[in-house]
Length: 112
Image (cartoon, rainbow, N blue to C red):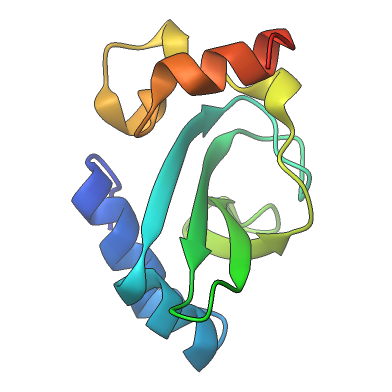
């Protein structure tokens, strides 16, 4: 599977959710935070999606290539958002920009 759109990204998470709780949260509320050129799980880039359950429990999910095989995507649960690595403004693609690119740009630049 190639991830090219926001729908592809969310569908991939639905199909590969690490837990049933996360799957339910993805279906309840999700926010694409956009593209990051480096993620906490390895040195490659990918996307971060914040999912929220109906009880307001949140998970941060990083999606990128499995660093062992580089042949398929993987979903990782991460603890924090590395805003300094956000690069959604380097692309015209909404998948990389995320749902609220101006807000994310401010977070990266430390202005919020």
